[in-house]
Length: 79
Image (tube, rainbow, N blue to C red; front, side):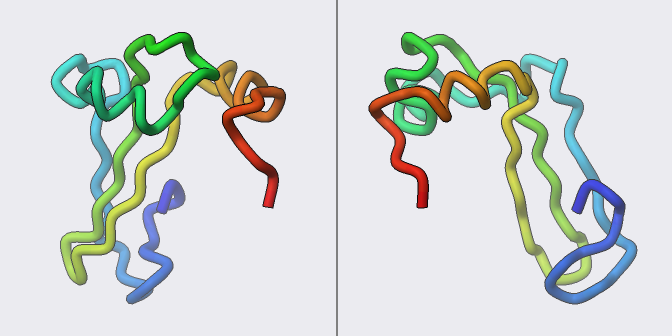
């Protein structure tokens, strides 16, 4: 999705939110569910992508620094 091509329908019709825009930050309760103990319940900025052809939607953590914390957290299991 980040490259502008939808992985589901292959359309070049992908749009993204601005991760720095507070209007597109997960609500506190959703961020707690999403990240859990790895972030001490702080708000988590996300990048959201949607294909306007098929409606496929993806969300990414915008702060790449959180990814390492998730990898070492007991709240997450590597699959």
